[in-house]
Length: 359
Image 1 (cartoon, one colour):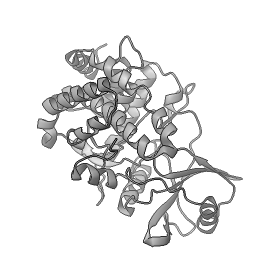
Image 2 (tube, helix red, strand yellow; image 1 turned 180 degrees about the vertical axis):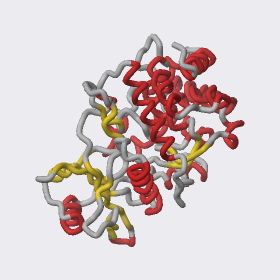
Image 3 (cartoon, helix red, strand yellow; image 1 turned 90 degrees about the vertical axis):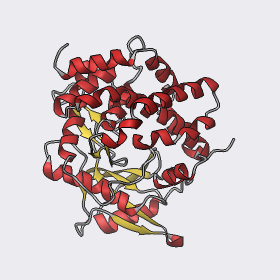
């Protein structure tokens, strides 16, 4: 089976998103040397499973850190965008629990690694955020609403933020969803292909005609349950927001659509229940424009479908990360099917009720 999208657009978008190259693990001893030289940090360095970069947990006498080395084909400007967004939030909204960037001994926010063949990768260090992630707990509607409120606050703080690379090409950006229909043909299950086509049809009918009119700003881009650190017993449920790797300028509604997609089907009898609870909290802090609200559930379905399609495609291209990739998307098709059984008009009505503070 051919494992690359057919169109030049899709190929370019996937390449710009760092999804096309096979993984090239960086040497751990090199990372250790760079940490000691530039950060004056030494300690135990353990590799963590991630989607496309090299990530480590560094344990030192003074605390733990997260170390990231960008993928070989990720542009330096894109890495700079991610770092700039985090530092903007640290400066303008220091009360938000966004993961902090650690500076080098020379007060730089990264280290450039020059490899053979002229390739460059970027090493960054972040303070490690302890605690379970949202994906590993069982939050009720109130806690999900709190998580939604946190993303709303982050988007409010990001509203004035700009960066030269914020209009980057990103396959996960739903602005491009309708142009990736070729991915359906790389899905072996015919029932899954039919589900995907149904979602593409919904997106084409409802969202595509409005794309140029939607409210836009820089968004987090991947506020998934794996990027939200929580403390279930605390009054402050969300204690950390991590991974700004998908930061991009896009439609505002596409930001809450990501966590909503991850929450679809979590309660099988009411597949939209948890997603709507999250959206209610988001809207309390960052209200979605009334004309755009009906597009939110379609965007959530599109995001879940996109993950299912890209995950299958990537698992074939990067077999060394197959278990990690498929583990994050193992129930996607089931949850898409469950969610499509509910009238979207009913979902939108529920979102509108929550927007106006009614039960």
